[in-house]
Amino acid sequence: MTKTVSLRLKPHQIEEIKVAALAANLSVSSYLHRRVTDTPVLSNPELAALARLVSLAHKLETDVRCEPQLLEELHALVRELSNSPSEPGGSE
Image (tube, rainbow, N blue to C red; front, top):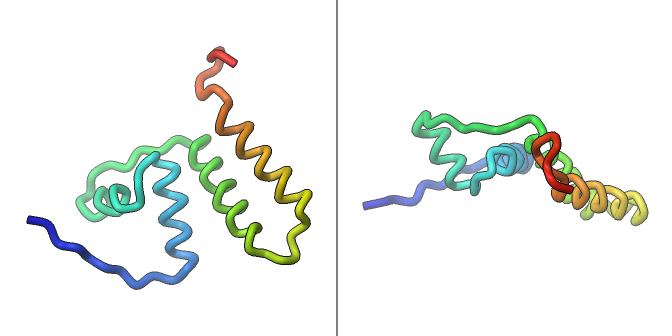
C-alpha cells in the first residue's frame, strides 16, 4: 500500500530540488524518496553543473528582459554539453 504526501515549498526550493534530481539522474519523486529514506543519492559534478545550466536557461526563458541571442547561445551550450562524452577518450 502506498500513500501520497504533499509538500508546500517556495519556488526557489522547488527549483533546487529539480536541479538536484537532474544532477542525480533521477525523477523528482525518486530523488525525494531517496532523501526521505536516507538512501544515498549519487551525483557527479559535471552532471550537477549541467543541471544548474538547464535550470538557468528555464529561468531566462521567462525573463522578458533576456536577449534572445543570449538565450539561444545558452541553449546551444546545453545541447553541446549534453552530447559530449562523459569519459575522457570517449567517442565523439
